[in-house]
Amino acid sequence: MKPKKTAVLVVGDSLSVSLADKLESVLDKGGCTLTRLCREGGGLTRPELLDFPARLAELVRRTPPGVVLFMIGANDAMPVINGDATRVPFDSPEWKATYAARAVGLMDMATRANPGAAVFWVGAPPMADRTLNAALRTVNAALREACLAHPPCRFIDTWETFSDSEDAYTPTALDASGMQTPLRTADGVHLTDAGARRLCARVVSETSGILPVPPGKAREDIFSALTNLTPIPQATASPPPDASRLGKHIIKRGETFAAIARKHGLSAEALRRANRGVDPKRLRPGQTLDIPTPDNAP
Image (tube, rainbow, N blue to C red; front, side, top):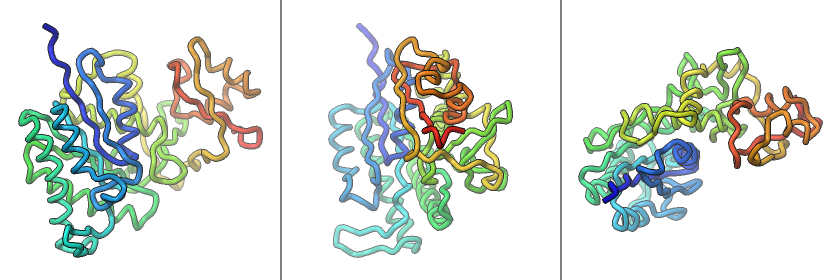
C-alpha cells in the first residue's frame, strides 16, 4: 500500500499566488499534493471578494491538510465590519483583537480538520507606499499575536527578507557579481520571479523540513535567490521593469537564452538585463521571459 501523500494548502491573496507557484516547482510531487485558495485583493476584512472562512471550511472538510500556509494581510489595513454591521476602525485597540480573532478562526478550522496539521502564517513584506508600509506593521503584529494565541501556528516574518540594512523597503538586490536584480515589480507591491523565489526559499527554510522539498536543481534555484542576493537601499537601485512596456516569450523545450535573444532581434546581454532574476543556464519549458521593446532594451 502506497503511503498517503501530504496535502499542502496555500491560502491567501495575490502574494500567496507567487508563493504557491514557486512551491509547486520544488515540492516532491510523489509525496504531496498542493491546493490553492487564493484571491487577488482578498483579505480577512474583505469577505465580499472571497469568503475565506466559508471556502476554507469546504476545502478542509473534503481534504484534511497536512500543512497549511496562510498568506493573508496585505489588503487588510482597513476597518473590520462585524456581523451586526458595526464598524471597527483600523488601528484601534479593538481592531487588533477583532482581526486576530478572525485569523485564529481560520487556524482552528485547519487544526480541527487535522489536529496534527502544521500551520504557518506568512507575514506581508514591506511595501513602497509609506502609509501602507506603516499599516502593515500593525497587521503583521496582530497576526503574530494570533499565532502566539494558537500555538500550533507559527508566524513566518518576511519583512527583513525584502528590506535593506536600515529595515526599509527596497525593490532591488545585488547578486554575487554585483548585478542588480529586481525583487519587486513596478507597483511596489508584487514580486518578480526572483522575489517569488526568495519568498519561497524563506518559507521553506522556516518550516524546518516539514515541506517535502527534495534536493536538486529546482531547490538550488529557489535558494539562490535567498543566499546569493543582498537587498540594497532603494536610493541606489535602478527602477523595477515597467511591465506595460515588455513583451513576453514562453520558453519551449530545447530553446536557449541566446537563441531566444536572436529570435527577438536582441543581444543576449539586453535579454539578460530585462530578466535579471533569471539564470540563463537554468531555463525551463513553460517559463516566461520579458522581452524589451526596441525603445526599452537596456
